[in-house]
Length: 182
Image (cartoon, rainbow, N blue to C red):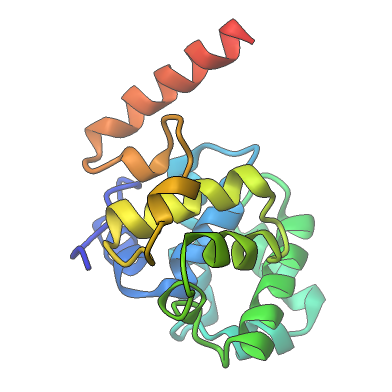
């Protein structure tokens, strides 16, 4: 397990992503239609505003309107605070009910890469592409991928390939170039 995942400009947020599986999962959820470094800062901001460690059951049971207000900030945790607060709450509900509140159990108890991919695709806000990217994160960054994770992980440049802060800009350029070809 790394000491930090250098995906934001905030060292404390980067340590949280590496230390807390729920923070990492929420960050990945928030990584859509929003700059990735801001998305992965989201779990840190959420923890600060809650005034406690991130806990799936606590977040799942929060008053939805209160969670929306927390997401609004300022600064906003996401560009779409209401919809992403709802999706985060749905994600936390699944983690609480199906994984006993332990987000890391999603990958640590997966039988193999295909099982992990299925589990991730079943999460709110995780389509096939996001799930494949997250498989890569688990395998490449956390070094906790189950057998066969390499076969189902994203085979395109993604956040899973970012080992240093400087790689974020490079990844952004690669994504722009890929979109330009499409």
